[in-house]
Length: 112
Length: 116
Image (cartoon, rainbow over all chains, first blue to last red; front, side, top):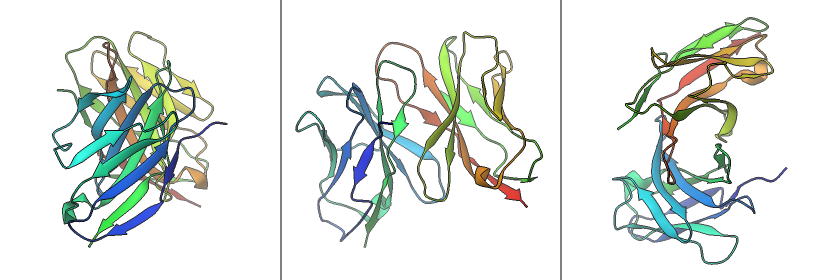
């Protein structure tokens, strides 16, 4: 069964460094999302992406964040200058023409 | 803006028994989707069940069923014949059905423990 994959599974970085989180959505899906979950809290929406542009973004998704679909398969989230409060689990999700969003296993980002 | 509320931070159930997890939501829209996601200790988000607001019939997936009360804006999840593998965080989520790439809005989750 097709699934969303994410790399790396765990990323440790120092405050102020740039990180790129990678996702490979399900191959025939058209809609892509990033969510984050700070430990012990609820899952929060960051950004949605369709047809090579951002569809919607939340207040969390400020100028430090960017997304890109550099080729036909990858979907990346870049954080330009990480802060301690960016430490969280980051989930990529994709959706085809149906209703459901399918989530990847997540990347745990730790900012020290 | 839509909100989702899960009023039970933790629940427990005996193996083979039935448990119901509560969810309420607030929206001014008439057409939308509701979902339950399961998050085991691996932290993967797994879709359990979905419900379209325009359908009166409650969704069922094997041991999982929902009680969807549109007027009350309530969407509870019933797990029958609970198994040890059901232990996880359960998140209720809402998605607008309006045109566009609308995101999921999640509740804070309910941690379910299953007692052998």
